[in-house]
Length: 206
Image (tube, rainbow, N blue to C red):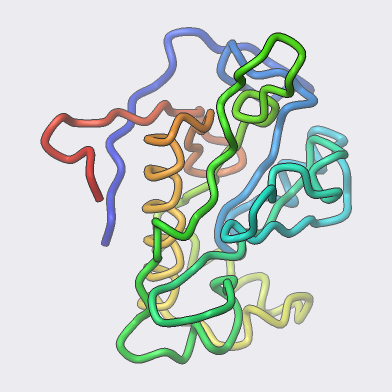
């Protein structure tokens, strides 16, 4: 399992009764994470945009997608994987049924360009990504409970192994994007304290 070293932020503030890092602006927020992590719960607390969005991280200029224009909102991610032409979400069958598990293809992930000119858009600072990444066993419990309501087809096939694999993809991606200069922080659940990512010198390269 891929782990991320984190620590609490020195400065927090409350927005809509939820704790956030002090630098976060309400309209910058994009909330992502694996199925059942608590994205919709947090969006409802914030009174954010109710419809889920989707971005394919392998597409050029994904950062200009229409789905990102209304914020805060919940965003599902499509990941490029080695040996697979099209990006996949971790709840799609080709990813879930792959054996051995597919590995993220980080060189194919597109990164917003840095701001070069005074009047040009600063795409790297336009959004702040919150990755909700609960403990695997807690996430499995949440999804089993949700499966009983029959509201989400992604909960039809559940196991601790699957949940751990989904979490690992999101953890690795959060770390990689953070290394590339994208504003990202971690929250272990909708009610948890946000954490900043710590990059250790010997572990900066995935």
